[in-house]
Image (tube, rainbow over all chains, first blue to last red; front, side, top):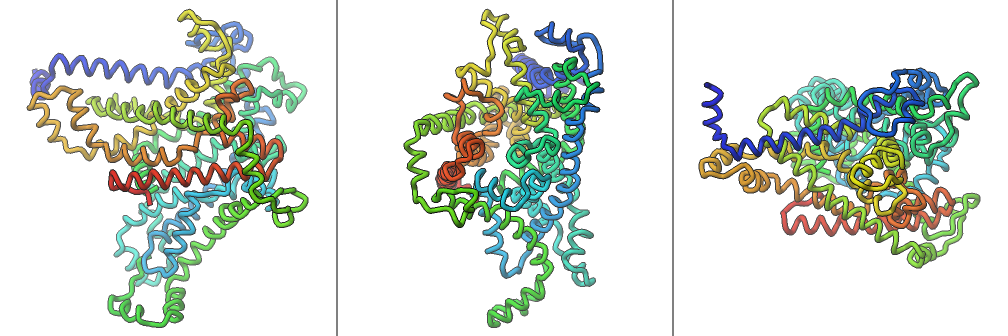
Amino acid sequence: MEKRLDRKRRGTSAGDVAFNLCNGVIMFFLMFVTVYPLYYVLCASFSNNVELLAHPGALWYPRGFNWGAYRLAFTHPLLLSGYRNILIVLAVSLPLNIVLTLFCGYFLSSKNVFFKKPILAIIMFTMFFSGGMIPGYLNIRDLGLYDSLWSLILPGAMSVYNAIICKTAIDAVPDSLIESAYIDGANDIVIIFRIVFPLIMPTVAVLLLYYGVGHWNSWFPASLYIESNYNLPIQNVMRAILIANSNILNSAATENDKVNDFAETIKYSAIVITTVPVLCIYPFLQKYFVKGVMIGAVKG
Amino acid sequence: MRKQPLAGAAAISARKPLGMRLSEDFKQNKYKYLMILPVLIYLIVFAYKPMYGLVIAFKNYRPALGIEGSPWVGFRQFRLFFNDVYFWRLLKNTFSISLLSILFGFPAPIILALLLNEIKNTAFKRTVQTITYMPYFISLVVVCGLIKTYAQSNGLMSQIAVQFGGQPQNFLMNPDCFYPIYIISDIWQGIGWNSIIYLAALTSIDQEQYEAARIDGAGRFQQMWHITLPGILPTIIILFILRMGGILNVGFEKILLLYSEPTYTVADVISTYVYRKGILNGAYSFGAAVGLFNSVVNVFFLAVFNRIGRKFAGMSLY
């Protein structure tokens, strides 16, 4: 009864019902096409290699359930070194990213600094113009970073775009808080870590996500700067397996690893292992996305 | 930041000689300068030094001689590029891919946001959102790996094609299929994420307008067209200007992962050419020249579209 009244108030007509129905169908279709390719991967990763190859069409459940591919993916030396390298890159990069971004955002948000304008110009110019691929590559060689994990950490130490997001967040911190800290004798470095940082935690979380996902998913710099297979981060190992169809896994396998027995399924299990960590994190940060995206687009 | 001297003190300090003001500034802001120092060092080493490295575009760079020692050749590298047999093909492909992505990829998230806005059930809406954001967090390598797997002659796409009376084939090897694959997968990956900003813009629309429209007998489509769309139009325009400004920024990493020799005719763009010539063939100077050309055209477009935005929409990026 109440429901009907409510419906009447909102003016539910036949046209409305048809609209909602169509909209619902479109949304379900969208969700299906988004999820199915990934669901296929999940099914394929738990399948038996031979049965999977014999069954080229759509998958709705694993063919011949088997997790040998996972056992292999978790023990294969090249995949392991790939995970190790990306974890090293993340562990060193993220603190560096956050500290530099905070420093830059704090500086850009400050007033009454004599050299702020020229420094702002120096920083902003890099957003519009860059040396490009070749000079960047030669620069890494000149600096002696070639084939070292530093070549993946240092060039991406800070993104100006993220620094501007950070600046906008710091702008919203009340001036009075910072002034009273000055009066208590705190300097800017104390203020940034003791007062500003706790207040802009939501923004820092988004920045961590941006930087973290960026590093985790990046492959192009490593394809330029890293030469030895055992220094490649995980995405480049994935690229060799998925895109180049190289036998990189075979050649790096130890005697008793039967890579060939899992040639197809190991691809899928490796995809699951590299994708699931990120997919587990983002839903928890979803409510902060709007903030980050808004600031970035309007000020960028 | 906020260490503001008293108003009177500021007025006095403005009249002080420059040297004194500088020394006061350094005394007052020494920690701020100390903080920005690592940022500046980073930018100088990893942004400005490569910009200086662009001089090799006007040289015949040889690694043994270094940037300084390599001989100057003026605009020879640029002339080589403009007379390159592939020059027009690269230009055509770059603009085609970019314009097609804008044509199909730009409206997609707007439509999604409009449709999401019409969902009254919050739980359902949140579910759709969470799910459509997902592909954005999947790495490009994995997305392209999946495309490659599904496009194989015995893959999912061929199965579907056969259902509709087509022939099984390797779709990635067919130049006719490259743009559709590229653009559809782009939409697949970005539609949810890119709709966030429009959804945020939607929240600022006054709900009473809908109420008034309903009383006047407007249907859902009419409400969408006359209230929702105009409400987010400023956001749409800003993002469109941004997108047009980066017209030469095609997703070249994705092209690099997807293209192959049979599809070079449609898929080879300026940046992939720089990669092949410069990095793989070691023609550093030529690659740098082509890259510089790309950057300059990019800056030009950015400036032009920023102007257009300022003139017609009163909005500017800088």
